[in-house]
Amino acid sequence: MLGAKDATATVAVSDLGVARKFYEGSVGLRPLPSEQPEVVEYKTGNATLLVYRSQFAGTNKATAVTWSVDNTEEEVRALKSKGVVFEHYDMPGATLKGDVHVMGPMKAAWFKDPDGNILAIVGR
Image 1: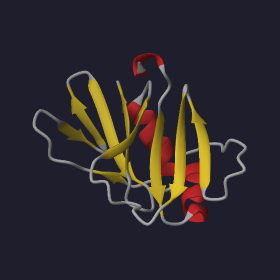
Image 2 (image 1 turned 90 degrees about the horizontal axis):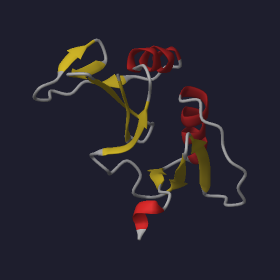
Image 3 (image 1 turned 180 degrees about the vertical axis):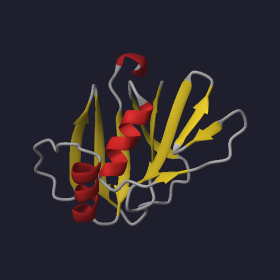
């Protein structure tokens, strides 16, 4: 079944040009070669992120993509230096330290792409 298969995170955007500036310039992803005019694929670790144009861009109210990182604070600093703005959520059991939500040994930070898709980094 699907447990042994690779999965692809998929994010809908309204404008691929704006999305590319964000995902490539701010987040630091590199596009894979593609012949599809309305789709950009990025290799990210062992996974793939597929960004495509859709009229439903930004309608998901939950986290769309999560990256596992070694050091959450370092990633937050690097992303902030590229203009990324972080979200702050009131969550039971979490303490907000700057832009990082601390939940025991786990640290997480959330941010949005230009269409409002919610993205996260999670680590220690």
